[in-house]
Image (tube, rainbow, N blue to C red; front, side, top):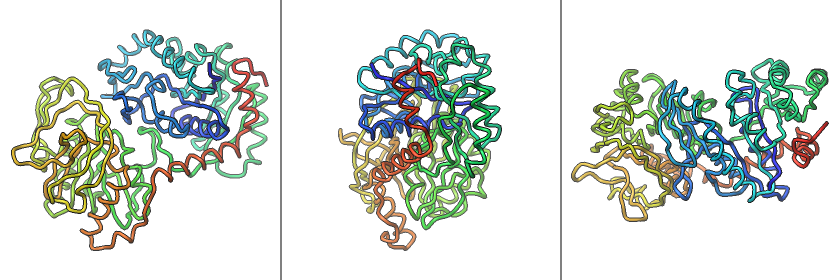
Length: 499
């Protein structure tokens, strides 16, 4: 069975995911077979594995850092919020159903066998498992039935690194207060603390570190600086939505209230000369070169939001003026004539779409999940795009039918069609459609031709190599700023490690 180490945080966004990713990369560089694990993830960013199962993208990123194929064993429970008080519950990659928060909390301990089966299966395949907690282990109203923080640490006898966020302030109170609220067994599992997102001279911080060690009885394993690495983060707490600069080519993305899989745009955010702006009002839209409606967990509600805030009218006006408009998954459904929810997937009813694409969507209770490949084939509507290879994954609850004589957008490798293309508009169900170099270069060529600039103005960009570089930069920062000898001793000695 694998050795194990767990990263917990004093709060959401303390840096658990990035520290797990960095440790995974370090262990992989040092020659170990390593895998990430998070028993329960809550996120709207999801991914479809090669066997058609759904998992959280954070563990996909961590698997990439490990150099291995993502597996639902790494994330056996995924909660996809559908409202402020309820989520779609996905277990081992399959939809279990929609549950209110009360319903889920009443049943979650019954999922422990699935969690342990996934962990055990992963453990026999690897040398080290790096576990990520969720939120804070000191939520005293939730601790009794916990299966993702100290509850899981007890089940697998995992030593814990506790990370705090100094950028938000009060990091000593965060770390000391969190440990103080743990019971004695839980305190014993905490082997060291880590301070994250530090800016400045660490020597000025050192007296506080010494006092923290005295107060908690736990060593400080290191202080990570505020890192400037470009690695996908969780969708609910991210700074990508605050970027407003305009590049040589400008892509505008409506920031829907229930936006999902915003990581579809990560490759554009990293592409030199291209800007991605997330907009919430007509005034912010400006004059982009491309508008992309993203995926969403609540298509009808977010369509009504677009309508109420005026963005629908602004997008329609831009489209009528010749600006290309694209929709992905839920965004594709919004661009159609009508959306019908006879099965009550989103509460029932029907609503008119934006009317930009000649399609109609009918929601179905069964979720469609698959990995696909294909080529763009618009029949000459977009000559710069035609024949470009694409690959990605579909995860949606609706089926979209094209009206007579409407053109599909993509021909899939199995001969089926996906999406729809018209003059100045196209839609698809493929998440990750921009990730292939061929499809990305085709879209850049189309946009450059429309703008009257040479595609050579934008540098070629190897996204896969770029991501590998970012993982290595993260690993370098972890090695430089954390006591890796201490961390390796914790991994080797496990829950019995004593400073």
